[in-house]
Image (cartoon, rainbow, N blue to C red; front, top):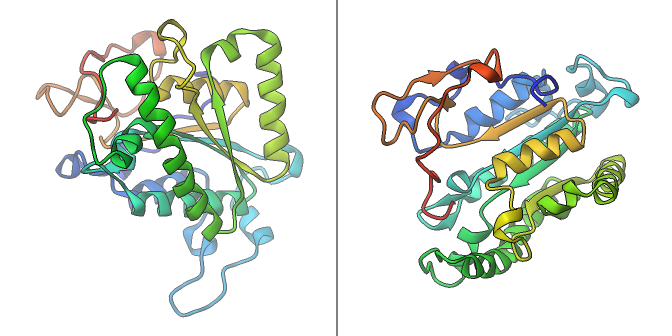
Length: 275
């Protein structure tokens, strides 16, 4: 996977330490489009009312533009980005829908891996505390996934982009038959210009057969779909040696040259109360 996925945009393009804990959705959106080679001036109409350039012209912004060589982009958005003070971050969902639509018009195939189902479930039940037991978390995920997908459907419909819900569990990818079937399903959705919204099937997953977090899930999906790019939207500047919110000595790692040289402390746990 490391050889397949292009490194993320330069860390200098993302929000600085002063914005730590508050993802700048405009910068994140611009960074993704810039990395993909899409000119924002072409991707949307200007404020003077001039029409946006055609999809055919947008494709000229990409390095490879043939129908048989379309780039596949996986975008993972985390709970800490999707929720603000216990409520869904509507402006981020809107920016995400616009970004995906821009990429699609530019000739890319897009897959979104989402978190936030447990947090959304807690919101539906008037912001109850996140359960600590597995069954309780699975119940919150089942409740929250309905609300989350309704929001995704509303925002993506507003930009005329059809979506599909795909729930995956680790055992689906461990079994060869299920793996190939999942791969064909993704191929069929992408061939129909549909954006899959992917999450772990939390309701039936057991502790020993869970991905652990959706960063891992997004990496598996990127490998499954032979993706060219994997973007992880987060509320920190980039990859650190530790949790920058609690470790003052944590250093930003702008580029990972070799996975074998990566030495980070991931013991800090989730970055959000509902993560």
